[in-house]
Figure (cartoon, one colour):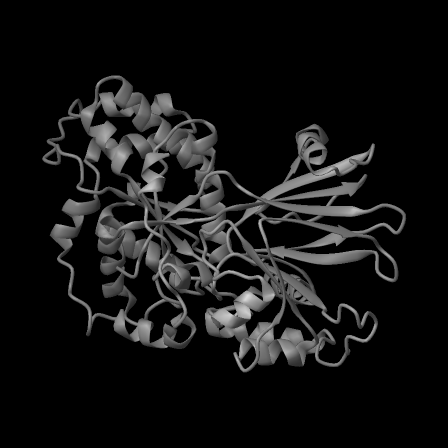
Length: 462
C-alpha cells in the first residue's frame, strides 16, 4: 500500500516511563498553546448532513438509512451553513467505563466540542458497527457523486479514549478494511484513559489522563487532525486446543472454525486435533503466559465484582499490586524447572510494558551482537521474548533496576502446552486475560504470526 510505505517509523519512546506525570501537568494548558474552539471545529467537524447520516446508519446498523438521512437535508426547513468538508474530520470512540469518573465526563466534553454525532460510546456502539455502517454510508454517498462525503472518507481520522485493550479492539476492527479492500484505513490516535496506557506512551500521547483535561482535550483533537502518521506491527495469535472451550472470552479473542486454522497448521507442520477448538485474536503490544497473566485475570474479576474500588488509574494500580502479593508470586521460588527458571513468558512488540516500563531495556551494540539481537522497533517485523522469575525479580525489572531474562527475538512463535500438576494456564493479550484449559494427553498450541498489513497510528509526539 503506497500510503503505508511513505509513513515514517514510530517515535522513540525510551523516556516515557519517567515523564508521564510531567506530561499530565504539561497537558493542563499552562505550557501548551491554547486551541481556539471555532478553529478546532473548522478542522475536525463534519458538515451537519454528513455527521447525521453517519450517526443514523450506525444506529440503525444499515448504511441505506444513513444515505436516506443525507437526502433529507434541507427538507425540514433547516439552513445548513456547513457545506464544506472538515480539513481533517475526526471521530472519537470513548470507553466510558475507563478512567474512573473521567469517562462519562469526557464524553460530555467531546459533545460540546465536536458534536454528539462524531462521538461514539463503546458501551453502546461497537467499532465494527461504525466501520461497517458509518464508513459504508460515506462510501455509498461518494459512489452517488457526493464529493464532500468522498473527501470525509479519505481524510477521516479516529481517536480512541480508553486503555490499551480498548485501542486494540478498535485497531482490530479497522484491519477488516484491508481484508475487504475498503482502503484507506483511518489512522488512530489515543486519549489515555486506561491503567497502563502503553500504546499511548509509545506513540506520544502520554501515560495518563491529564490533570487539566478539559483544556487538554482540545489539544488532543487538534493534534489528531494535524500530526503525522506512523506504522505499528500487528500480530495474530491462533489458539488451537483439544475439544473444549475457553470461558469468559476477552474482546481480543474470537472463536473460529477449525477449517480456518487448517491452512496455518499445514504451513507450520502442526497437527490439528480431530475435535479441535480454535480461537484467533490480534495483539499490538504483548502476549504473556504465566503468573503475570494470572494476576491480571484476578484483578479483572475483582474489579468486575467490586467496581467501586476501581476509581481511576492510581486506584487500579494499588489494587493490582495488592492482588499480586496475594498470589504467591513473591514467595514461590523458580526451582521446579531450573533450566527455564521463569514463571512468566512475555512476547513484546512495543518498547513499553506494564505502565511504561522497559523490561527489554536499551541494549548496547556489543550485547546485541553477542546475542544475535537487533535494535527493537514497533514496526521491524520482530517480537522480543523475555521471562520474569518470581515476584521479586519482576519488581526489580519493573523498577528498571535490572533487565528481564532475554530469551529471543522472533518473526514467528509457537508455544506448545500440556497440563500436569495444573489443568489450566493463564494467558493475556494487551491486558485482556483468560484462563486457558490444558490436558495432559494432548497439546494446546498458541501460534503467533505477523499480520501482513500494519496499523496506522497518529504520532502524538509531533
